[in-house]
Image (cartoon, rainbow, N blue to C red; front, side):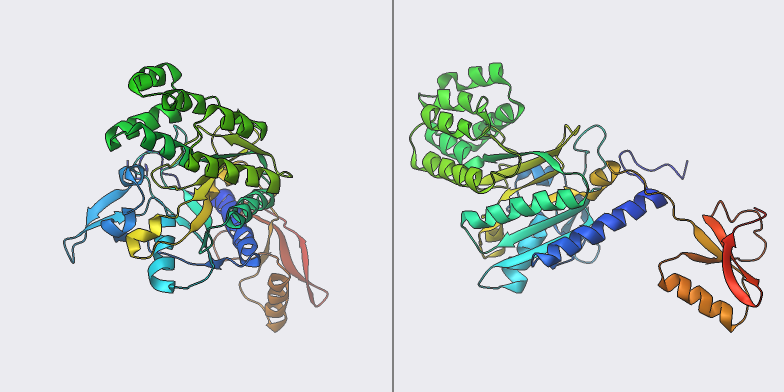
Length: 384
């Protein structure tokens, strides 16, 4: 059947497409008001540019193909953030703070969940050039504001720090393959398997790795973490960052999950996941990723977030149909002026093409332009 799309790929029909476009315009306007400049990277890039510095998990999500012009491997972007990092590092080449935003489709080899699309409409904001906690605070506040504007306010914003995991894994002296396996167990919070895995890891690191699965909750969990984790410089620095965020964001629904290692290959510090009421999956993800720009010859402090507009649109009710006005195909100069004035006022005016009588209500028309007493007036659509 030629009309059947691949699994987890969907058309956006008029009602959804209108919601998506409304969200896109509103949220990009919000980014602009905060000083974030819009960029539009290409859908395709050479694979080494598209995935370098972004970790193995992104490589597995990227569709690859061969460029017929050069014979080089290319990829369809699975995440726009590395492209924006390339733009900051290699094209703009600014010395100070750079704020960038974007919105466009990405493509995944596999859906992230059983119901997710493989073609998210990714919208995001990235802040480059400032290593201080002020940048993380700005980005998290912007994330919360964007979800509020989208009418899907965050009920919980989980914050973690991959520096804790990196410090413990390094102290355990694990090779990359073992570290990867450890990451997967922690991310799944598979405590029985994790306990077996760390049986040969020396103390206090083994107990600290197990503790990460239990260290979640409000800001008091940070004091518990200080008691249960080794007194390492990296651990102290990470907990200090998290305490700073707890203080600065105390008006937001912030919680802490020190075992959340989402995207640990990609991120270098604070990680963020925002959830809405009734949403088991995160609505937005973000964090600090200072190392990604190094792949493009210019490592810069970087932090940001992204979300899928399609997921947000699914949580919004369909807007009530406003209806359109049907105008005659031919008329006088006054008709043209009336149509122009109605459109300028925000009305939808359709021209009645010949041979389609009886179908205009189906097309969305509920009114019509009729000439009465020498004037063009809008009346309820009759005879449909």
